[in-house]
Length: 180
Image (cartoon, rainbow, N blue to C red; front, side, top):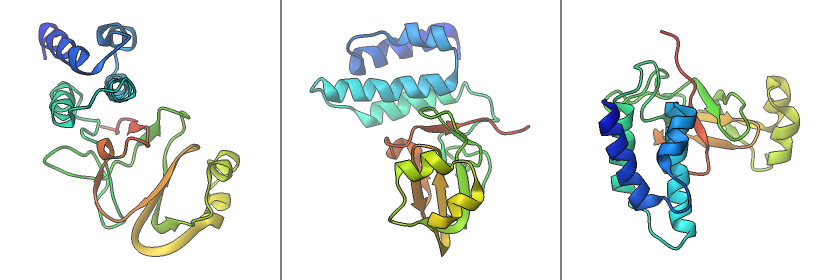
């Protein structure tokens, strides 16, 4: 993608979603796909907090456009799924569960547990104190065929179905890049 095309795309997103800061400044500052995705999520939050609405279809098109410029070794979009879902590099046409997730809130790698789900008593403090020790984390996991439990130091989820992380705004997880 040419720099001019990216600038035009950022201008469009800025007009529709951003309130008190500019997209270009952050992209120039960070120069990273993960930061661009984070930027768009911030745009939505700022827009909604200011009383505006977020046009998710437009945002999705913007994200997909930026993703085409990404290296093939990163998932785009990023999916999670149950233990029956194949792991690997996910794309819009080849939906795979990303196994290289990283949280941009706590900066921890996201751990996955096949055929498990998080117990209802699992909470932030438990993860904060026990991440990334697998044995300690297993005390709050229940065996459940087909599900996959995911967790970083600040968030957790159990899922059976293929889920696009763009539909889970509370999870600040991005693809940490797959080995070539």
